[in-house]
Length: 399
Image (cartoon, rainbow, N blue to C red):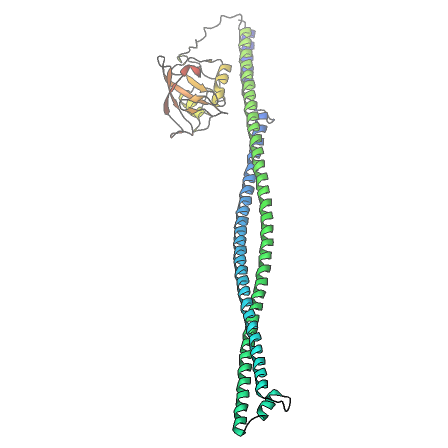
């Protein structure tokens, strides 16, 4: 190869090395937009839940007020019934007193008539005076005077007692009727208040039902946004992987063109049993977050790339860098699980998937024994050992 062509090859490779560095787009991606909408939806749902809690508290308060109001109405009804019974009783007693007055008056009249008959011929025209004038002597006059006075006083006393009793009973009856009127008015006010409380309760229940409907609508929207996010995330991952493949393909084509006059060096074979020596062009250090499955795998497989994304994206990222990626289990390989794929008894996260390091493979039972990290384990930084069946269903990255 001439010096000029050698220099051109070095320059081409240098430019290629710069072009394949990861580039973060300035504009927000559709996945990011969906994530923002999801966050806004969750915030709105939290606000609605707080409003529902407030509405529920108001409903409980109104229920208690209605219950208390109903108890008071029942008490008023009982008191009104008692007052009505007492009024009826007093009315009966007043009637009896009135009958007694009538009887007393009749007796008094009878006595006067009797005296009139006994007095004989009228002299003065007054029964009492004639009764006295018809006395036989002074002693008889005194006796007759005392008799008339006593009879008069007894009749007046009896009549006064009956009238007093009738007056007292009438006063008691009036008091009971006034009490009953107050009770009836109080009951009417309580019934009006109960109606108002019931209306308020109905409005509060409608408000709570409307808030619950909004929660349901938000849930449906959230599911749609999550689906949108998953789809956008998958599309962006696929685009990123395709871009890497295109860069690697271009790099290979450029290398082939610039070195066409020289004898190509023998390539290091990449085997499916993890015995190769290939490393990512971006394998220095560990840029993944501690406690994540990706951090653990990078810490034990230093040859893996730093920019390979989530666990479910590692296969495409590795393939883009020229690694052998297939469904052939092997010790020393990295195993990548798709989102929702079962890792033994648990499922990988729907949006992120999972990665682990293969310690051994049992072909007879089609099982792999893996070590892994992650926040869901007792030791987030690993190693956490697990044996998983159905090994041939997973994606493996071989060095």
